[in-house]
Length: 334
Image 1 (tube, rainbow, N blue to C red):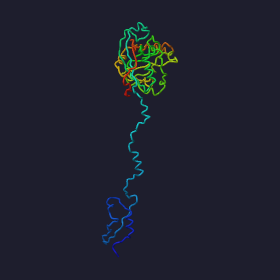
Image 2: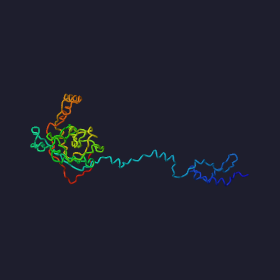
Image 3: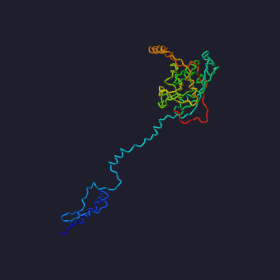
């Protein structure tokens, strides 16, 4: 009997079809092992076919990812940077400067001596002392109605004009107010003529800009002090405006007043106006006024009308629209 055990050819064929490659050594080995199984006693050897590995040990060279790998990658890869959509960009206020106007300011020392100068028009003050000029850029794309009415008030004839009217109040370190509507002989604006009904006062988009620095120009709504009988007029138009003087922001004015422009030239004039002394009541007068208002005394409001008024006759000596070659400026201002 032969010392070598011969296996059927079918075993060889089966092994060749299995393609077992568990590592580089086995991948280069013959279809079946040629190492004899020997015993030291008999020195007899037999050639045995290799034991096939379980199917899950077979290594296939392919580039396909399993579902588990895809799930892992999807949870570990960083998210892409979000891209701003057109709707998000549309919420940015358009502060393109479409028009420019000028306001000239001055003192009139003789006004308190004779309040009928030039037919109640301060613009004809004989001893006017000029302070300087402001050049204001207007946001006509953002609030077109407010800008149009402001331009009309700068170009209209007396008494429906800002020209020859007083700066009503100065709040040191914050802002000053001008354009109060009322009696012309008191240095106030007469009933405006030819203005459009301002529907932007109820439009939320008109209140997006903030009073975050000096030189911001806005339509005075929360700080408006026009008399009640003036406001009840069916043809009433609010034309009172304010300009922030700095040095810091005025957050108490945000979302309450319509910002429609900013000072382009003349910040030195703004600072000069802010430095003018004003009437400040004593603490005892403030307490008495608060008590009078608490009990419903109407004289309390009338008394507060002179608070923060400048102690000098500060007025708008002239105003108008500037004609420039290139009116529109890029939206670089807040």
